[in-house]
Amino acid sequence: MIELNNISKIYQVGEVEVKALDGVSFSCEKGEMISIMGHSGSGKSTMMNILGCLDRPTAGQYSLDGEDVAKLSDDQLAVIRNKKLGFVFQSYNLLPRITALANVELPLIYAGKNHRHTRALEALKATEIDKRSRHLPEEMSGGEKQRVAIARAIVNDPLVILADEPTGNLDSATSHTIMDLFTDLNRRGITIIIVTHEADIAAYTRRTIRVSDGKIIEDRIR
Amino acid sequence: MNVWESFKTAWQSILTNKMRSGLTMLGIVIGVGAVVLLVALGQGFQTNLTTTFNDMGASALYVSTVSSKDVTVIRPLTIDDAEALQDKTLAPSISVVSPTRQTRSTAQYGNNSAAVTVMGITPSISQIRNYQLEQGRFITDQDVSGRASVAVLGYQTAQDLFGSESPLGKSLRVAGVRLQVVGTLQKMGGFGGDSYVLLPLTTMQSKLTGGREVQQIAVKAASPDLVDTVIAEISSILRTRHYISPGAPDDFQITDMREMLSSMEATLAAFSIFMGSVGAISLVVGGIGIMNIMLVSVTERTREIGIRKAIGARRRDILLQFLIEAGVISLTGGMIGLLLSLIGSRLMGNIAIGTETITPEISGTIIIIALTVAIGTGLISGTYPALRAARLDPIESLRHE
Image (cartoon, rainbow over all chains, first blue to last red):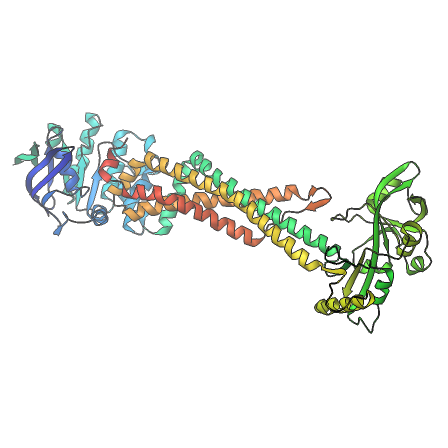
């Protein structure tokens, strides 16, 4: 379902070219749960941005659900992000001044879908945070915010959830409940890719990809 | 995302940033309020001018002695000229002829004195000028034929000389001539003011000035479309009476008040435009305010824009959100400004400027123009910030603190 073929990403910093990704290839089947590990500066964030259609590779092919997305325009990528991807960020990235429910409704608004209220509430139920649907993000704990963010990621029935250090701001007990939630969602058939630098988070996934200096140095299935 | 959703999103964002939205609105509130109020004042002034002219007899023609240096022999207009104009065979189109003679003088009653315009008139003047009696009676044909020593006082003169006392039946002195007050007039305002003494033209000529001369003969046509015919008739009668040979210039001039009125109106329209532009400048300033604050808003909300883009907002979604936000702010500001100007004009009510009173007039046209301009200002000044927001890179925006 996801096919990265010889992907490179080169940034021009002044006169110097920085190779953030250097010929990365890997594929991922529907229903997999993968962790991507690496130190900061290893290229894992760049990989996440390209996987998430937020950025285009300098060279190489990226096929998502049978569609070549490496050369699409900004607006075409926005539609792909909306329809096929769900994002979970380290710092939650909820809009601060609207309720949990309104945050979860946002992707449906951009998708132009109906029955948003019901669907958003269902997503909040799936992440067990529907009791807080009328609350503002600032009234919630980190774990609760991350549950709302995950609800937002799944509300539009994505093919893949991309989670960038989803437990980075959480204590270890909360981290484990969030990882349990991801595992649960994965059992229901959603593909999940998690970027992390913590080994015990990566331990939740069967497959782990290690990145260093813009290259995949290990792709291990337990 | 459709327009309605963008509208809701924009409204939400305005409500969540009340202070900032309010300050942004203020520029438009002041701009629209100023434009509407100034234009309303201009229109009120114009209406005032039109009524004043109508009171003065805008439909009448005024014949007076020419003031050109090119005419060497001048026979002044006389009361006999006025009588000649009443000839129904020579001047069938003329319905009213009203000769007047006026001079400045001082009127005295007891120890009180007042500067006045003394006007010798005939009763027919009431068909030209809109005199309204306060008390007593007006000057009659008998007064004119009998050279009666009677006077009708303007509102201000009656106040100046008699105060709270009733002037009816009292005698006052004008340039040594004793006149008995038979009537007083209501307040008129207008350019003439209310300081005058009216007396029979014949009395004035025999006791005050001597001679049969008059300053002016007001003439009214039988119907408004006969004005040009009337001008021809006056011209022909007076040229014969004044022995003017063919080809020689007239020794009199005929003034059409409508021409004066239309030229005054043109001047006023220009004045209204000028006042409107003063307001327009404040609208431009308001627009710059919107642009400024929208730019700050875009920077402040970079992360929000990043989040929206990450979950699927396209450029046009973001563009529309910010454009509508600017439009809604300026439209709301415009409506508040309009409301304030309506209240303001109501509070002002009648503004007294000298002897004039001006009532601001707010027409439907002004309201529509003001609101359109308000929305336009918002959209124009919102375009650049909205484009900036739409072009933001999602990755950079998500990193923004």
